[in-house]
Length: 352
Ligand code: MAN
Image (cartoon, rainbow, N blue to C red):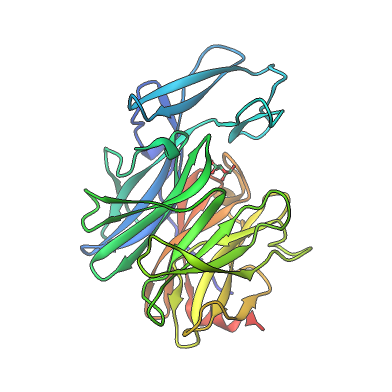
């Protein structure tokens, strides 16, 4: 399949973003939700900041205190046997019973704006900064669905209570209305469809199962976008394939004549993230019509292979113009990139 990666990639890197917190550094500007608003392309960037420290052996976890509204730092010694520091994203308690895991950075959502889709100006302040007890470890991976003149932004809220999915609505990307948590822990990668189908709203979601089952995509419906039910398993991971380890929704489903085209990410057990697609019935999106055997986009460019967490392409929003899909995607948990591809070409490579 022909993929046209932008020459300017990566479009936004951590170095382009000024940290909000004094004595912090920005280590990621990635996994952005996308909106078309007032003739501009808005990227709802996940900005990850971590504290700078010159003390050897010290690592600090930033934690937002929802009582005092302050950001606090928790100190860890890198040789502490009670914690595992091997994943750069996390400080993991070795014993699940008597300790918590922490993140090494705090993420929040900041907007980058562009009139041409290639060159972006980044807001100086956050659009969504942790504001409650479910977000003490941060807000990650926003997705944006426009329904009439309202934009619904859902995102991952992370805290010691778990990883859940929350929703706000906005009409101007300045102020917003909090709609609360829409999927309980552990759940991520929620994608709200852009219109009602047979009188109901629909969403893809990805429960992360801990005792039995795999990291698969489910579908649910709702009368009001807040109360979600009629959960059904949609598609699962595939053994020995590019999507064998985990899958999760990527872009807001795109309506085509053939069905709803849902572009999702799939990773191997070794955490190599690619993008693929699945086609869902127009009138009942819980019916799967076809799926990509091979990825439509895989980590290949240098900026996709190398970074904070390499070998990751993570599409989380797009803009459709005729047959062209402009897909914005996070690369290596570090930066943002964009590519263009033909929607018909994606549909053509799906198999039953
Ligand atoms: C995973 C990764 C991280 C993220 C945590 C919590 O480990 O996606 O980037 O911070 O989950 O959501």
